[in-house]
Length: 110
Image (cartoon, rainbow, N blue to C red; front, side, top):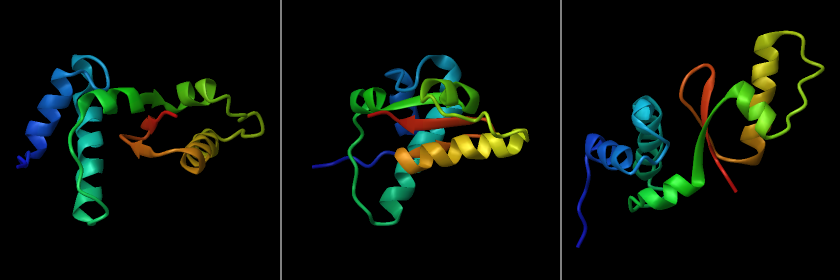
């Protein structure tokens, strides 16, 4: 037996379990849920919502914080947009990246 959740129900469950942190992470949590909905809609796989596993697997970063945390060398980039794109590409080559907005990403931690 299974229960199908709406987007809002899944977001509410993730917010309750603080999957991506506290109360100020609604936009990011919604982006995470929508990412998994897209995977299901493509028929890649059917997922079960496990807030604890999501909390362990995903983190929010600004691109500058990600560069620092992942020790990404951006010293050769003088244009800010090029530097940020270098960070995005570095992360995309190494992990799952969910872009929330121009400067915020959710990454899968390993």
